[in-house]
Image 1 (cartoon, rainbow, N blue to C red):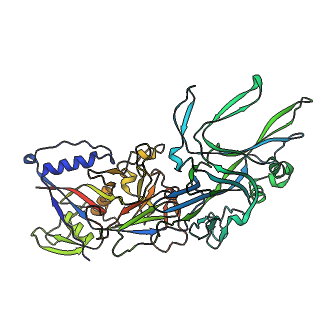
Image 2 (cartoon, rainbow, N blue to C red):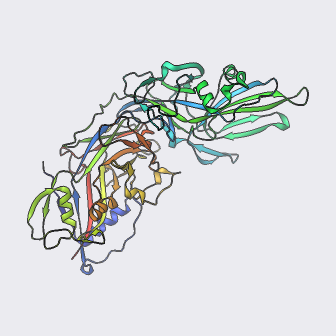
Image 3 (cartoon, helix red, strand yellow):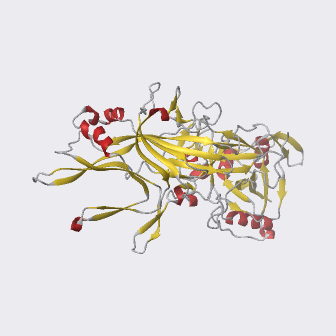
Length: 565
């Protein structure tokens, strides 16, 4: 099947109007330009579309340890199905070889894990209030079951079969919808078979954005502390007395390795209690995430007691287990020959899209209007590069000389308007905050357009990387679409013969996060994905490049250029 390079001709003035519209679309930052009359211009402007091919890749066995954050809860996506996320984590004391004093007695044991929250105002007393909406998926009022168990499976820091760290991988599509699994290079682990004592249970857990006020002392000594929104629950005192206080002076509390082997951490398990649920992004790496043992001991003053604490932190060796029940769609690898009509972008061991630029063949017309059919990449180069009298490319200063100047290149992507979604909330539709992240599959890196994009604000991912990764918007026909800028990516191919690598597209709620997650035993070009794509349970469905997709909704790569008269 041949794909044709066709040029749509515009007058100078109409193209400038088009470019101004493109530049000022709300999905890209504004670009100011001057418009000159066509009669005064010594160049023509034009555009054409490069042949591309896009297809699905099902994701499985994704790295789930050492993530920057962790999902917890139950999320139901109407277009896909349900995802349940639990956490298995090591904990380590802040200090070793403790001296608990004389006659120590535990008053309370408190586990606290903050949500990712942002200040959003003040209350009537001038105190800061917070929002957790950026880390909340699903319905905050739909309860789930939260259980905290002792974990009896030893999480290794190092892989005995290599010199590197031990990675763990997801197994969310195992078919078992109740137990939490993980994979290593040579083993399948069912963490539910290693559950120890139940330390806490809440049959109706819902996350709250309320500030937690902790009051200590009495009378004149009373003090209050305001804590950001968190999971904050009491744990069984007797368990920790036996685990910690009874081991004072013993090797178990003498160093980190001994302690990790002695107490192998916690299994924080989420379970559905109904058709809906809630899922939150937890900050276990925060300095505020801890298990705090509050106790009293004898004072040096006879008859008095003093307060003390012993604190344990969550180690970096923690992982997210995933259980997927995709009962609305079957995710499969796509057709690498014809492309797919629908592209499924789904987080939490779901699916991504692969885009091949310059796919197939294209029509090339030379200066004498002779037409030939060439591989698309060759047709592109001959169209834009200057040729000498022998038909060879002209090169100066290690760059190819161009006869047409590339102004802008945009990957235009349309959302499937028939995708089932919940009703709007606060006058915003369900997918309004979705972002699409594009990356270089071969090099496991963001695109060069992303790397040089200065609109970077890690504290506000929705408004970051607006030049390279446009926000979702709706055109004049009400069709939801995205634009990914690939101008420098294409220029590098044209000017420097850089490799025409495949691009990956994933859904991300944090496009500023570029850390990668490995795929276990990958058998194709995709060896890693951006870890941020795992850390969202959300999904969207896009129109692909298959010829059955209507032309006005088909994914395309538009090139805008200038040619001297």
